[in-house]
Amino acid sequence: DFCQAMLFAGGIPYELDDTSANNWPATKEESPFGQLPYLKHGSLTIGQGGAINRYCARLAGIYPEDPTEASICDMYIEEVMDIFGELFKPKRE
Image (cartoon, rainbow, N blue to C red; front, side, top):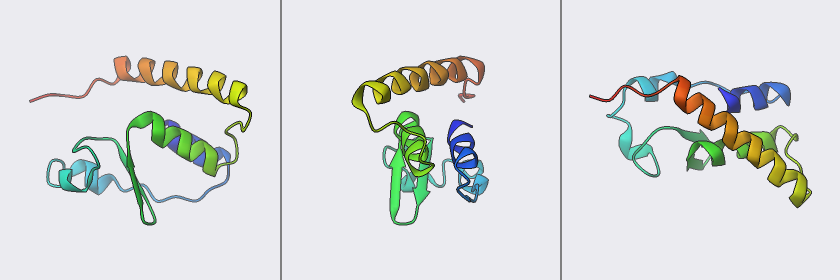
């Protein structure tokens, strides 16, 4: 997972809560948009994979502050997310 990689790269400790995802849809009410993925960090709960990935990169200190560099970084994040989305399509019932 991209967010975990960012946190690991920045030396940021984290706890992976796979219980919430594995108990879906019982935890759906906790999610900002009623969908996965979402991230809980302290009092913050955010949804949407791109927002989560950029947040983790900022926490890790590896997200650019320069707007041009950040936009290039965003471009690659979105491309990686598209690739992951095709490789790991969710199962729909």
